[in-house]
Image (tube, rainbow, N blue to C red):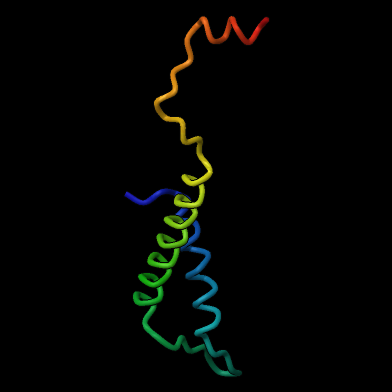
Length: 79
């Protein structure tokens, strides 16, 4: 399942792509391209963006995974 952030971003991307792909004149509006294709592209772009954001955030996490804080460690900090 997709994260809600990805769905929200995909909807925003879709709205922008649809605006760019729409021609409006005095008589009608024409969407250049298939809306399903635009939707798929929107989700692909949103998922890629989310993956890169997750990767960047993971790089910023602490790297001392094996470090365990003991009561004695905390007591030593209080001195």
